[in-house]
Image 1 (cartoon, rainbow, N blue to C red):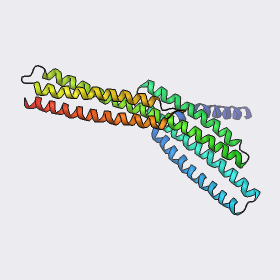
Image 2 (image 1 turned 45 degrees about the vertical axis):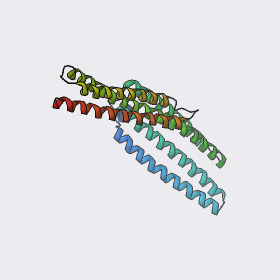
Image 3 (image 1 turned 30 degrees about the horizontal axis):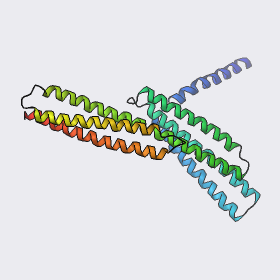
Image 4 (image 1 turned 180 degrees about the horizontal axis):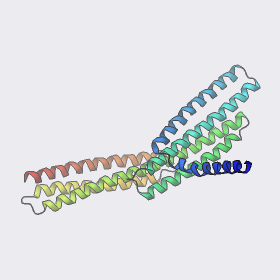
Length: 263
């Protein structure tokens, strides 16, 4: 009877171990987003407790209050790391579930996410090792440095996703222009139609150049360097490309209108 009970417990533990990865894998982007919201709220509360502890210590500088500052500070740092981790997992799943993002870009983003998750684990160990307020401040400064690295990775990956989306829009416009040109080439008095199509084609070509320039700038969003400036430059190029494509779309619509009216 005892052996049977032990076997049942062993099977139950084994089942739990086998089912655990399934539960993790089943996490959706929406679930991960909610986890991030929860972690964010927990981080806000932990920071508030740490501020209260510092105020209490300032009013009454006992060893007990000093230890409270250290303990709540460690809790706040852990909560901040939990928040960042939850955010990374959410963004990773959001990209993974997007069928419009190519596999190579997904893999690149996954690599950056994995790299930053390793950094978070290392920082957790640093936080656990804090024994005094000086070490608490040192770990906090280290976390700030890692945060800027994380931001640069996220900004670069976001830029690459935007570049991919912009290129898809340009592909659609290019295909539309080619089809309209093919349909218009045998029409009588098609000079104005072809002129509109030529203008659209030129705008699409300019858009491609600006999208390529944006991608080059996003590629340089790294630390050390000037990640914020490069990210801003990439955004500016994409804004120009968007203007090019809007102009191309307008010319294509005007060409289509001329074709419909037979002008």
